[in-house]
Length: 373
Image (cartoon, rainbow, N blue to C red):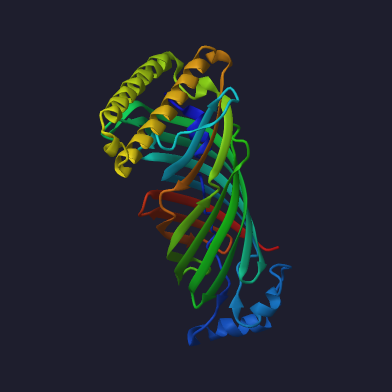
């Protein structure tokens, strides 16, 4: 079985944080008195942000009010799959949670995005996200059934790596505060990622607090900023889809695996029946034995029904389809991030950021251009 688009598309876990590190800075300190005094009398030349002139005249230094950045984002993350239901040819869906076990499923994504933004208020930046992504999903899983001693064994397995393209759009905002070069930013965005095999776009919500410090360089308007923070992602857990049977399994080896799996189900069912029939009436009333018997029968019946239905679908494989429903979530909601930005001028900035710890690793590179609006 290769499970291709079924798992790869439905388990999309592509989420990005496109934060632009500029902020409204409160000028403090005796050495900056001249700059602070000049801001009090300077006429602010742009329409945005709202209240820009009033804030500037109170001693705040504002960045240019609009900008656009080009970003490359890479991420690898482990995911957890649950409540998996699969059906064939628009028949009933079978819940496979009890008999399917996944071993370290991961999604790797690389994306190129464009991020336009404006400062709506002196302390609130809003932005859009437009991106194209290349994503690959690695899945390792097996079908397990119990025997008479409640020992679960694998009767079929599959491992796959599937690649696909995706389009992402999103919106976000970043409230910030800056005093004397130190700053706090609370970035958050919502994104929708479209893949042809999904019934609807996958939704993700990102939250990323950052605490940083900007250091001036000798050349005017140049500086280097460094920061630490966190990255939290939430994705819409429900996924449904419909695809050809050939995208679900490797047809060249499917019949052999199905026949082998049905034989093992039958063998284990015989062992369970013999064990149960060999118990005394008193032993059959023992709650432990009752639970063991019911669990084994339920799992074996579910595996047998699923494999038998798949066996029937294989007889018309060219015309057969698979319907599926599942829930997915990141293995870890949070990870740690560090980053830095070099401001070449008030117009041009270069940024890099990495995230690590937990089960997610990520990297971001960005070029930003800002202008007054």
